[in-house]
Image (cartoon, rainbow, N blue to C red):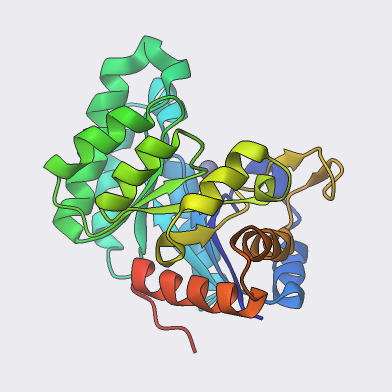
Length: 257
Ligand SMILES: [Zn+2]
């Protein structure tokens, strides 16, 4: 079974020194593609290097995360945009970008950076990977005014009504390990169109509940997610995995061998 991690942060300091081990673990578990999401200029540079080192396995999504808007260095936004434009042929998405209600003190700046990232995605014809904690309604409302190639709402946890609006707009959602234990997330998985669904770990995150028991995220957890989706949707696990593989190719415009 081929597995996919559509949203992970390989350049996060928590993974430092463990990437070779993580990649070996991913290959052993059947993970055939990981999209590493950057969060600032430094992680953009490092994610590009990782995608070179692990070509045809690690793909870069580059952008500025709303959590970093507050600590952007002088010219960092411009330099990040410049780097992404130069690397447009290897970049698979603009991400992780979005809005976070917990960081409302920088709301105007968050909006400014998010808008710049969305325009960048429009200009380059790339899909976007969205962080929308507490802001999903707002984002689903504002995105149709941009001409975007594709939208992935990662770790979607908002209401079923917002989910149906997102589905109507043709957006994708991705879910991770909580799909095995979270009632709310299982309801979302039940309702989501499988043709618009992707799996993720969002690593590094520590998932405390069973069957993860406080381990730092590993790509092998993706299998648990696929199995949970198959159980919730009452489908054979291989069919679920096959559909996710097709979705991955469509969304990120990659042809996997
Ligand atoms: Zn993330």
